Image (spheres, rainbow, N blue to C red):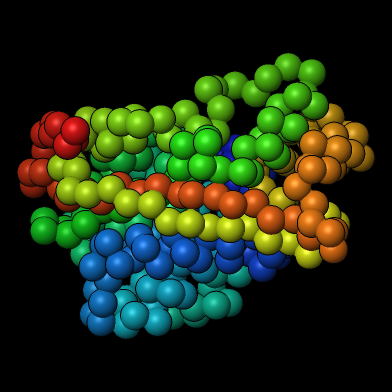
Length: 272
């Protein structure tokens, strides 16, 4: 079983809040990834985990032909509103409904970490990327460069038992993501970082934007929303500005790679 059944339900609870309030805060990462992927006029671009289509819109503005896939049907509805002529499909990244070598540029911003089988997902990204094309995978930077880690810690501490897995920064540890990418048969070409500050005028707007995310929706299966809300509010007290606003200084990272062989099982070694 892939990740779509679980993740689609979680990310579809408040799709408009996510797509309009929170997702756009990742725009600096999207711009950096599209640039690293060489997206330009006529490029065939695939966005794996496209959500409400924010990155896809930026790719289309560069003149690209855009396709995307997401686990959440409600988010895909928003993506289709934004780009009616794009090819958006629902499904698992671990099993993509696209032909081999269909795209010149493949991006996956903050999506691979939610896959049930990450190596399978990365191999699929490699498979649908044309020879000579680029695959760019992005996610959180290391914890010390992510002030949003305070939110993750507050949510974790509010739960009666910790969530499964090794936490939101499991793939952010130095060398982990490049290693997985290499294991999937992609040659690592470069790495980069993008600053994505998250600014909210009020805590109430912060909460609307962030409770729409899959991880917080998963937490609400174990703890009442009012309790979780207050635990997070208390944890963020020191981060409030004099006007009541909240600002998180965050760094995201991305890895640029290329299919190593014609869709074979090749393995590469990431640069030191």
